[in-house]
Length: 95
Image 1 (tube, helix red, strand yellow):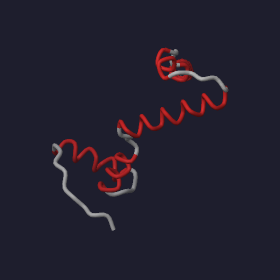
Image 2: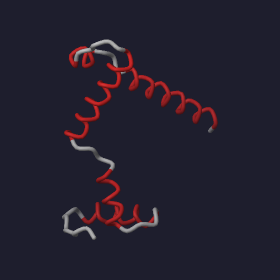
Image 3: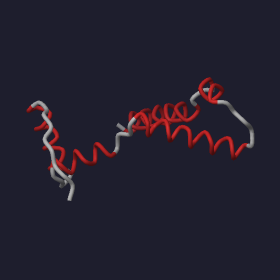
């Protein structure tokens, strides 16, 4: 079993998180564990970026430097923005 510890937060934050946990059918500790597991550290993000870049290099067979990756447009981010805008418009039309 995991060793427990105490964290200090404002009453407002605690009450809010407790309500969210209750609505999800879990304990406050379970909710905090879930939230923590969903937040990668800077090191984990860097590892994912490096792994993703390696896959791209291997798949396309072209050596792209990290500097070139950093200068490239955020294609996936742009796709997410377009999709989100279309969803907002669709929801507005349905209302």
